[in-house]
Amino acid sequence: MIAVFEKSGEGILITHSAGGGPGWETAMRSDKVKAVISLEPGAFPFPEGEVPPTEETTSVFPAVGEAVSMADFMRLTKIPIVVYFGDNIPSGDKPVANWGQDNWRTRLNLARKWAAVVNKYGGDAQIVYLPDVGLSGNTHFLMADLNNVEVADVMERWLKSKGLAR
Image (tube, rainbow, N blue to C red):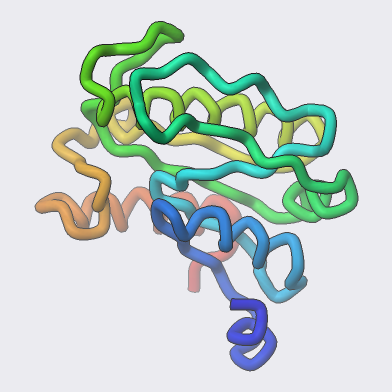
């Protein structure tokens, strides 16, 4: 992805699910990434020494923060970032029996912890749980759901709020 940005020039990086990890790596390595929009990423980088403990879960895929150098992490504080999650994700700190739902409960919790650390260091990271902005009925594939136009409208409003829409 870094080579793509080097060839194409500045742009907004949009990631989804397991592509979130490589997306953070790209944003930390390329000054051509001017913002990140991430749809339910599975991973989040934290500065070394600040990775939160892995939350108890019934999921076979625990949400684990990844340690990166402070210098790399600080690059994420230089660009606006928004992370979107669909609905039907349980809330709270207690595991739920359905491991698939619990998988996303812990990832949403980890995302909120990550955004707090990004913002603590002067960054601009926002976590959006779509039901909180009036959108319901979303799966893990927000871009393919029946309300994908409304999801795109939410993204466009965010881009406009950051002066990034054309």
